[in-house]
Image 1 (cartoon, rainbow, N blue to C red):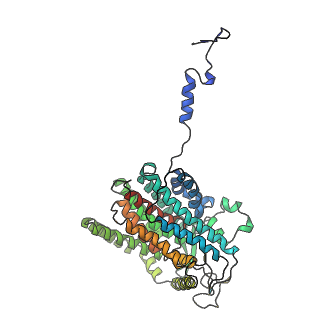
Image 2 (image 1 turned 120 degrees about the horizontal axis):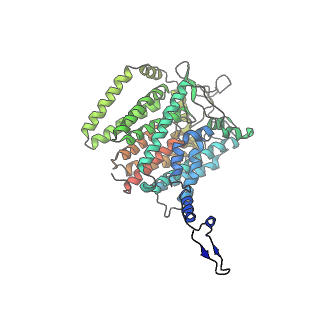
Image 3 (image 1 turned 90 degrees about the vertical axis):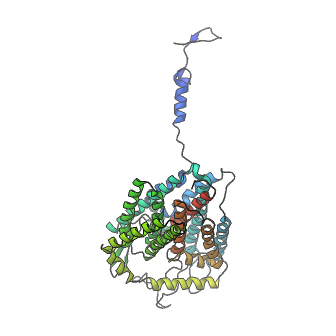
Length: 466
């Protein structure tokens, strides 16, 4: 054993291994330091996307993006300088328009049910936070770049979310009345609870609605509404195709996943989703044709034809026919669209801050909601049938011009991107511009639009090789 001489006493001592000396001390210290938990820089995004079923079950699924935007913003403040994409000032101006429109909370909009400001604040704050969080998400993904958030990992995270959404669709069909009290719901004081908040924090599998003359389950898990489910699964399907690429194993997984998704997509009775998917196929076909990839267009057309034949031979075809024969929501949608236009005409610059309930219904201004007839009998919310109508009413013509202007500018500026994920991002933006007329989109639908802009931005800066 090695010893050392104490110069003060002249006595030899063995080394004190407990103090970190000798053979084991430094090695143990290095081993412990090597086992320290260090999270990757991209963790707020991957935890948000891959762990979303957990956040939904805990009861803050609709607020998850806003919650995870906080650590994203914290990490952004350490990235100097913070880069922004072209046209981001348009989004900042839209946020400013949203903040200014808050001055109209509590005021009486024409032809709407009088509502106290206390009943409007929650919806206004939730949407404002969602708009800000979406901007933070865009900057976070763009500033991380390919090195800290590889595009392959980003696509994998979205593909996992797609798989969860498909499973949620089958859960809604198999167990339409499934639901449970979330931890957030348990902790929330009863005096703060209302119908809108209960919908957001109470996990459920489906909305059971009388669409075809009898109660029909329409899947919504892991989201808060059936239309949100349809919006998200339509956009994510595009990213699954980009994720598959030319890898045979991934292509097989993608084909199986998309085929499985067709069942809840059809049974959900979401006409807007069906049109959106057809629009996506058309946009991809045009992009391929413009790029001179004629054989790819022929192959895609053949695949669509085969899918069409299989669909016509399946029981799903009768579901579509019956849904098209029962356009029960057309009158409601047109009535609310007119209410949004009239509201914007009354306050064209700042809007009304948030949505309102209309007086009466499409049948008569004297017809209102009651215990026996809550939906079609009136007092529906302006903006509940589409983000376009919501922003038009809430922030006026100025707000809707800025909102749509941001995405249209991004679509035009990055139009030259011909990579698989670049085309997926462009298709997502085109679909989002359609969905905004039929679906109210904050949360994941808006986030997927921002992710698309971030992908195109990263490609333009040469972070990802073509």
